[in-house]
Image (tube, rainbow, N blue to C red):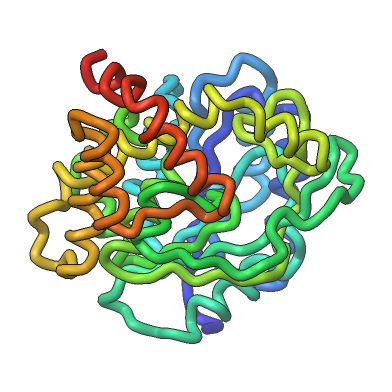
Length: 321
């Protein structure tokens, strides 16, 4: 394990407020065989200057696009980082969090428990939700997950900033096309590919301080009131379900005929596609039952049933549009 090289992939965009704190936490890791690859996605604040200063001070820090800064969007930016880094294992990093000192060491130990070089493997961990001043709120998950392909088709528990992937998964991700508009988020896409052709494993221990503030792309619900509000945001939840079905459809186009996809996973994938393209709610429900479709929570599974029974027209409109 001591010789494993880790590539840390960090995409920045107007992150000057917190970026130095994040990079410092990486430099303070107990595991030191790492290289930090940073790609800026078109910042207009002092982010670029901060990256340049850190690169000058530490040869392990690489500013990938220092001479060609352009905005690709977060999904394509992380894929560009993945394509341009070379290591044994790859970790993904957000600009506004803080890594706990043993993050690399603990995640790598979990990865190495099943050392199979030719099998795609993804490790993700719990995280500690904090406010903008790093005051702890609570662990985000605090439990183990069922990260089977059937589950990941409809919901995602993999948070990108906690992820480590091996070279086998990287190669598989890069060998296929990637259309950002077809994908909900890059971490969900990574989870889908890993669950379909390899495995996902979860470390039930927070390894980062996950900062919550007004600029977060996706936030964590940390209070009962916030969770209650989200419960009643029905339209938002429906759109997320529709986006998941769209992503599954795209996955089927890319990987549906792949010989490495097991018969069982093909059946689950075909069911997801059938749900999206069903002409009636009855047909959609039959596909749901046949594919044993479920989400990670009971509430989420109930929502699927609600959409298919009472709001099936929304799915049809999403395809037509």
